[in-house]
Image (cartoon, rainbow, N blue to C red; front, side, top):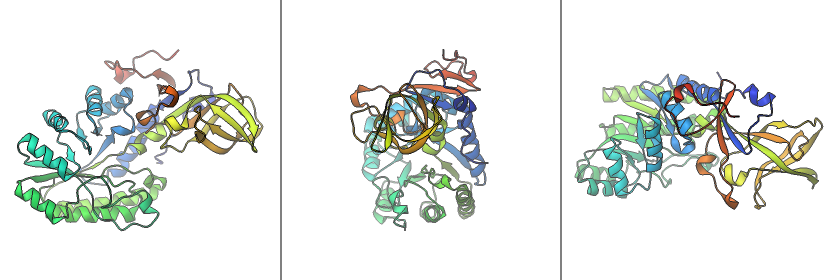
Length: 395
C-alpha cells in the first residue's frame, strides 16, 4: 500500500464553493497515512507512533489525531496547552529553550521533557532540587556523504547531548541521574545507510546507560518515504537492532517514531484565486491571492487542479500576492491557461504552512476547512461532539 493518499475526487471534479485563500485537510488522507505508517513500523517490537505538533497545530486536526490514539511531542507551552485541550493522553516534550518555570510546569503536568543540552539539564536540576531520572535529546557522530549531509546532521547539530563524551557520563554519575529515555532527531533519516549508523550508536548507548527504557527516533522521514522499499528495509533493520537491544538488556524497551511533515503534508490543499494573468518573458505570469513566501517556505507545491474553462495549455509561473520579487509558488508549469477569476488547487499544504506562516503586508492565515465523507466543514474550537464532526457543512 502506497503511503501517498489519493486526491479526493470532490476536489478534482468541482470548483469548491469556498472563500480563497483556504486550506482544506482531507480526513481520509490523514487516516490513510497513519495506517500506512502503523503497518510499516509493526515489524518493530514495542513500537508506537507519535505526532510532532510543530508541523500543524490546528485544533480540529489535533482532536482527530487524539481520537485516533496517537501520542504527541510538543516544543512549547503553547503546544502543550493545545494538545491538552485536544485530549491527548501520551505527551512528550523537548525544546532547546524551556525556561525553569516551563520545566516546572511540564513536570507538574506529569511530563518529563527530554533535555536538549547540559546547561538546560543543570538548570532543571538546580530549580527542581534533584533529578533522579531524565530523558535526553542526543546526538552522535555520523559518516555522511555530501548529499546526505545537506539534510542530516551528526555531532555538529545544535541540538542534543553527545552521551559518548566522558564528561557527560561523569556529570550524570556525580549527580546520581539515570537516563530513562533518549530522543534522536538528526534531520532527515534518509536511508538504510544513515539509519543503521543511528541504530549502531543506540545499541552502544544502551550498554553504557542500561537504565534506558524508551527510545524516540524522532521524525525526518519524508525523504525516506520517497522510496517506500527503502523505508520498509529501514524498519526491518531497526526491528533487528531492537530485538538485539532487548536481548542484551534482558527486558523490553519502547521505541517511538515521531513524524510531522510525513504525517500531515500530503493531507492538505491550498485553494487560491487568480488575481492577475499576463503574458511576458515567454511565460504566463499569474498572481494568486495567497503568498508562497508567507505560507510555503518549507513546501515545494505542485498544481493539483486548475479550475478554468480553458483547455489550451501554456507555460505558467504562479506568483504569490506580496511585493517580494521571489514570492513564487511554481515556475515553468504547463497547464490550461489561467485567467483572472480562475482558481487553482495546490499541494502539499498540510504541514509547516499555517504553523509557521509569515504575515508580510498583514495578510492573514487562510481559513481552514476539513473534508469528511465528501462534506467540507469549517474548523473551529468547539469539539464537544467532534468525534462525529457534528458541525454544519460550510455554506
